Structure formats: structure tokens, C-alpha cells
Length: 390
Image 1 (tube, helix red, strand yellow):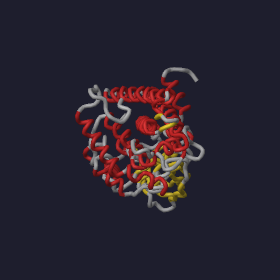
Image 2 (image 1 turned 90 degrees about the vertical axis):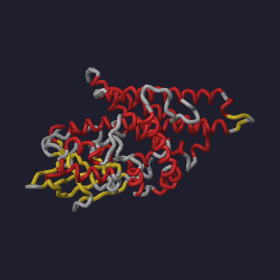
Image 3 (image 1 turned 180 degrees about the vertical axis):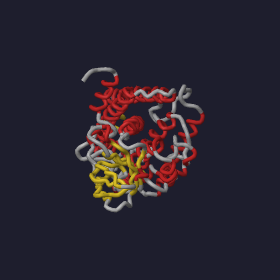
């Protein structure tokens, strides 16, 4: 790992070939041109231009890993790992969260949706013309997905939806929402997935203000007798829980990749600042305590990255290592927490000021330890997968 550019892919590497390096260069050019110059302005404004979706689509980023028939580009998991880290290099989690919200909204549609639904929804999203969001969390049901209360009752050729969702990324601007609803009895066996369009009558949205991810719109969704065609059912009725769980594994891998990327940005900025900052007549890098902070940051990042790369390879072999995915998410988010804290500490007062990438990343640390499954839930799920009682 190069301290001046910790994002540089190892060479030689058993994981990355010429095509991965070419893609990284293209993704880096996009971030340098279309995101980095504007992130401070966007964060203060609380949004980024909708046009960025189209630009990302034109650059081949939105369709990465999706089938060609829908406008995507099939790839191996290492491409997603590269993309997440390059986007994180911009130092603004809100951009990554909203720009790629389709990554958690569309997999159930792709795997379980009807042919008509796939053709209607997926191509315009991958082209950057439409935005997709996932709506699962409720005011009284977060990690306990089986406890959701938003209900959809069947009336003829329609479902009538009542209830609310909250903390929904892209909640204000999305055109399509993959919504978890209760169509049957209590527990996991009564959950279904519906595709809800934003222009449905009696479907309302309320914006939310957050500690971080300022330029990502987040909302509470309100369903008051919202009528949705039965053809918008994703998969079979009362069989939506398992697709959601599989979807969470994909989300957790993405969050881990982002966390590693943001940790690298903290390391990179800390090294640059410590070399330039003169204290008592000498650069900070001449101080042992600062050098040791930097080395410890690099150690944790390398361990997290090696874990992520080994899991990417296992996924390519057809494995679904749920326990290790949970452990990776915690490993990566704890690494980010350490790196963000030590970056701000090294910067001192400058690290407490806006605009500053390390200040923004520090504010956003907690969302990675909560979103996609809280640290505590990850430990419990891993324990159960390992055969431990509880």
C-alpha cells in the first residue's frame, strides 16, 4: 500500500488484472471530474444534481454488474470493490448512498420480478433516467424486518397499501420504490415485496435531516390507501423475506467497500497533512506518536481489504458466506471509525472545521455501523451462522 495513494491496486496481484486497472482509471477520472470539485458545495446544499445519475450511467458506473439485456455490464465482485473505494475517495458518503441506491432497490426486481416489470424498471434506472430506492425500515421495525407493519391488502387487481417507512435513502427523489409490505400473518412468512411508483395518489414523502450524508436525500414515506397494480408484486405473495435477506448481504458488502475507501481517504489526508504541518519546528511525521497512528491506520486498512478480497473471490466460486460477510462489515466499519478518529485528532482544530473531508467522514462514521445491519445484529447473525446457541 502506497501511503500517498492507498487506493492504488497492488501490482502484481492475484485478484486484479489489466481490465480491473483500466476500470479503476476510468472510475477515478469520473470522480476527479464530476464529483470531487463539487462535494463541499453539494453537502452544504443538501443535495447533488440529478444530472449526476445520467453522467454516471454514461460512464458505465450505474450498470456495473448488471445484465447486458437491461443496459448493464456483467463483472466480477472485484469491480464493485474498486468502484466503491473510488467513489469513497471523494470523501462524501451522501453521494455514494443516493447515486447507487438502485444497488439495493433493484436486485429483488431482477431476481424475482416479472419480465414486464424488469423491462419497465431496470433499463431506465441503469441509464440514469430514473432513480430507485429500497423501503424496508419502519419507525418500529428496523433490524427486525419480520416485525414490519406496513400492510397491503388485495382488492381485485390491486393492492391497497397503508403504513409508513423511514430512513429511506433517495426517499424524496426516487421514481421507483421496492417496498416491503405485510400481506399475510405475523412474522417473516407474511411479507411481500411491491414496486411502488412515486406518482401514486396518496403516497407522500417527508424529508429528514441527518448527522451526515447531507447531500443524500433521506425521507419518511407515508402510504394512505395507496393503490398499486397487482402486477407490481415482486415474486410471490408472502415470500418476500428471503429475497430481502439475500439483498442485505449485497448491501453489507457494498457498505464494507465504502468503509474501506473512506478509511483510505482518512489515511491519505493524514499523511499529507502530517508531512506539511510544522509543529515546534518539525513536521508532524517526525513525531513517533504520529507515525505510529499512521502505521496503525494502514495495518487496519490492509487487514480489512485482504478480508474483502478473499470474500470477493469466494463469491466468484459460488459461495454465500453469510457469517463472514457480517464479520467483514464490522471489521471495515470499525477500521473506518479508528481511521476517522485518528485523522481528526492529527489535524487538530483544522479537522473540526468545515469544509474538510476528514470532518465530514468523521460525522458519517456511525451510519456505516448502523445501516445494512447494526454491529450488534451482525455479531448475533454471525454467531447463529457459526452454530452458536442464543
